[in-house]
Amino acid sequence: MERSHDSSPGGQLRTAGLKRTPGRLRVLGALQEARQPLSHADLERVLTTDAHQGLDRVTLYRVLDSLVAGGLALKAVDAHGVYRYSAADARQRHEGHLHFRCVDCGGVFCLDELPPPPPKLPNGFRLEAVGLDVSGVCAKCDLKGHPKSDEDSSDR
Amino acid sequence: MERSHDSSPGGQLRTAGLKRTPGRLRVLGALQEARQPLSHADLERVLTTDAHQGLDRVTLYRVLDSLVAGGLALKAVDAHGVYRYSAADARQRHEGHLHFRCVDCGGVFCLDELPPPPPKLPNGFRLEAVGLDVSGVCAKCDLKGHPKSDEDSSDR
DNA sequence: TCGACAATGCAACCGTGTTGCATTGGGTCT
DNA sequence: AGACCCAATGCAACACGGTTGCATTGTCGA
Image (cartoon, rainbow over all chains, first blue to last red; front, top):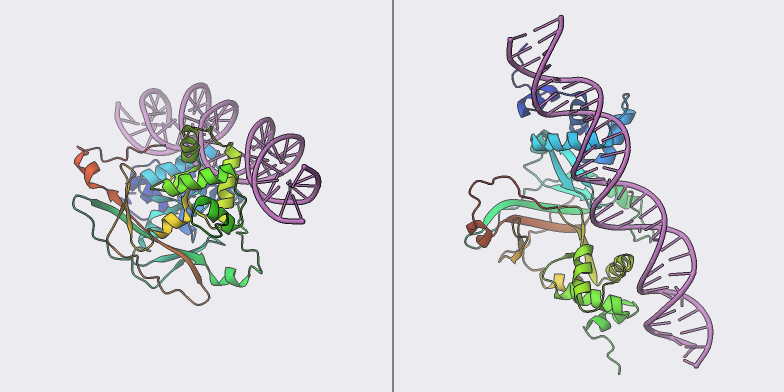
């Protein structure tokens, strides 16, 4: 019974040094199946409809924190100022190319483009991260058309 | 007495079709003098210490909304999920080159580097924004040294 | 100068994210 | 298997950013 370091949610939790609790398993699973980063509210929805009832609000926040701390999930802010979480391995599969974010539907699309080369910095400066944010409106949302409602018909 | 379209805050408001109120003048002036995008809280601080007492919380939000709607200010989300506003013309002066953000002191530095070329998008996709986020530690903060405090001594 | 209508201030509200504390449950040790 | 320790959970309450409704004030055009 020794699956030392398999890639199942359970194994990943073990490897990350996290206790293998039902909540963490369900959240990690949900993140890995999602095609885009999920907000706390998204996850509450996904997890409740899932059959079991959802986790407690606070617990979900803490589960997410633990996954991020363990390197299994990534945390970022969306255009509305809300945190969105994604599975870390899902992100690895998306490291070699750029992404396009639709400001309307929130969807993320892969582009056939390479990340930009790291810029030259002044002496003494240390580079830690370079992120290219490409955003606009995807084809589907553009078709749905905005006759003249220039304003964001946002969700939230 | 006809300065039809000058570049003073007052003239800009006129041009944008906004009423020239004390609040808008002060907020626009503060944004134009700032060397970096300001949050709502930042502005409340700046405006209160300014001599007069600050605007009402809600009024400040609405003033900012009107400036954004009039194209005089820009609105973006920072890493903490908080909206930050900048003067639109101030931003124009910084369009031809990249910027580096120090994650330690929060300072922003201009780089001698050109923005990346806009990526090619799939058919039907409409590009709205491309932002390159370059961050790390600036020379001064790097010298102050972090003996081994690898963890983020984050704020908030 | 006067009046219409936008801009302001005030109070109350909503959603996201956090903290404290008692209880439950996972993992390990014997 | 049983017991123990401490992390993980749930609950309540809070902090903060941002929004909405409504009465009042002030801008600007006639």
